[in-house]
Length: 149
Image 1 (tube, rainbow, N blue to C red):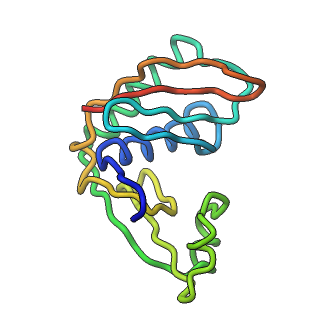
Image 2 (cartoon, one colour):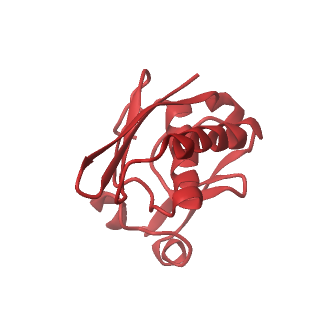
Image 3 (cartoon, rainbow, N blue to C red):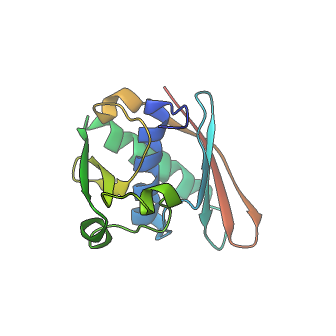
């Protein structure tokens, strides 16, 4: 792994992404900066969250993390991965892997996505999650800033 990933933050980001999909119908974040202290994710979304949505988002992420779901990895072929997840954010070196293998990270039955980052063994180690702020920063970009632990 080429980046210095913070496993709790990275795991929480997966849960946040899936919760955004389920609660407000956004896709996964198109940009993320994950740091040990505070992180941010940008989503294609037409507006800012209401305070009620922000509170519900934080509560839902924490409810999932509290389930202590197992975090597992599986290596599959590019063709197999393309049948179950989006490969749009895969780095070029992964897309060009001579073995054609992709690492999928599965968080219980809650989330599944390709990923090269480090994660905790179960979601309880990535809690609690706190949504620090949210803002609509440019046309169709919602930014969420958060902390864990």
